[in-house]
Image (cartoon, rainbow, N blue to C red; front, side, top):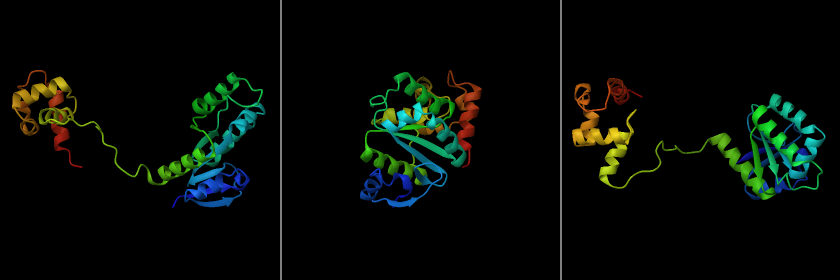
Length: 210
């Protein structure tokens, strides 16, 4: 079960109930800064579009960013709704400038959500990733060919410094992927276009013990 600490000032936002509806364990506390603590050292400052625009105009946002960076190892700014479509008199240029400042200068990710339900979904997903990571290994090469010939080429292209052209040359010379992988440096040197540095790197990778 996802466990999220929520600042008591967020209790009127309705987001707590949305998190509970999605099965989260919600702990309400009076936080010094930040609205949601997803994991140790990971916090989210949530602002509606109206509040985001207002906090730019009164400069409150920039002080909050500094305080958040001092308090947490990782901080995310969540903007709920469209800050360019509010009743505020703030100019679009000021919003763009603030978003750029937060992202580029302060290096804090800005997360955009449509509404409260979307924010709840985002918070729970971020909490899971903060605690568990992806939960599975990401394949280095996701797209896999179907035919045996292209599978063999795909396998050889996985060798360092070997692209499609070199892979085809190796397979033509040795006739099979198995023969390529078991070839000695002397045998590899007989293949046109396969240089000594590439051969050395290939053998080092194939013989590397994890």
